[in-house]
Image (cartoon, rainbow, N blue to C red):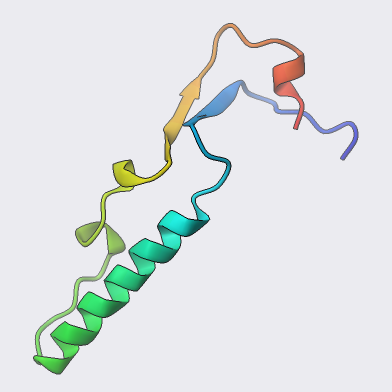
Length: 75
């Protein structure tokens, strides 16, 4: 890994290093809603996006960065 580098300058727009906690909350919320709907004999949502919003998380997507430096391309 000492020589690994990014091929394209696409970086995350972020204030956090990981979305692990956000994903745990989203999955917990999805499972809770699915359990209640199953107990009511209703149809459960197929995707997590029906329950949660991606833009609520710590990371807000990725962008192409035109003014990147060589240092920024290192992993």
